[in-house]
Structures are given as structure tokens and as C-alpha cells.
Image (tube, rainbow, N blue to C red; front, side, top):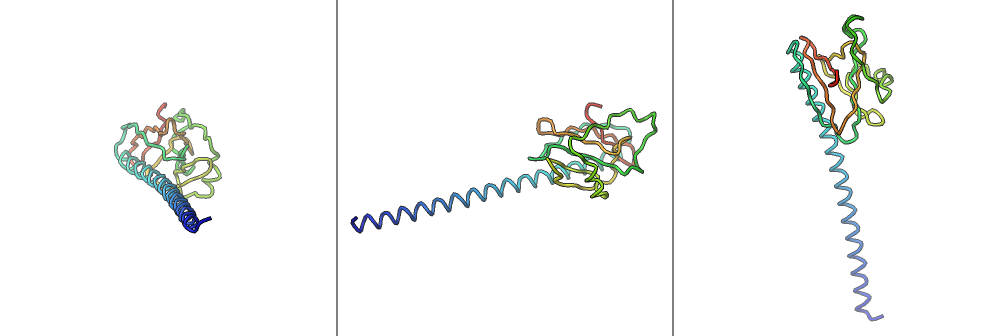
Length: 167
């Protein structure tokens, strides 16, 4: 094999290695950007929920329907309330509590200071928002439908009651 052909082969091998390295770093960067986008979407959902719950708490007797984009991977959002704070009388408790598609009980016990839980197949994130009421239920869970959570918030003076859009 002539010397020029050997040099060309080395250049082709070096170029192939460089292309593989560039593609590998590019893929890693894109995967990291996607993960960052998911985190930003979850933080936006938290901020929107917090803002709307605090705003509605002072609007006594008013109802407002809100639609929230479900971040990638979040399939269920659950709201929990301390059993000592669950409001309503037995006659006033005709509202459906909903059936959780995830077992939320153990998570509430692990994080009793939190009242909102975001799930996929496991707990992704939990947070605490003051002025939140689940009404007669100790917990209410809502599944994402079409990539969105649809909730009705009712202002009850000092708190905001979470209701299902179908109630």
C-alpha cells in the first residue's frame, strides 16, 4: 500500500472519530435540554397553581375553571388536607372525592407538611400551598386528560376549595 493511501486512511479514521464524538456530545446536550424543559414546566405549573389558589381564596363564593398544561411525565396531581381541617358536615358531603390512580396515602405520611403531590408512576414532586381546601375529602386526585389538568377553584373566604371540573 503506498504511503499516501495510508495517510488518507488515518485522516478518514480521525474524521470518523471526530464525527462520533460530536454526535455524542450533541445527543447529550439535547437530552439535558429536554430534562431542563421538563423541570421548567413543572415549576410553571407550581407557580400557576399557587398564584390561582391564593387569588381565589379572597373571592368568596366565586368559581373559576382553570386549565393547566401537564408537564412531560406528570400524569396525576393530588391535593391533600390535614384530616383535622377537612370541612363540611355529613349532609354537606355529597361531592365525589375521586379515586386516586396512584396510592397517595404513603406519600402523605412521608411528607405530612406538603399538600400537593405530582405523580407519574411514582412521586415526582411535592409542595405546600397555604389556603388550600379539599372540601369534605381528605384528598382529591386528578388525572391529566389530553395533557391538561382541568380544575374548578372555589373561593371560600379564607381558603380555596379544589373541585373537579365535572362537579
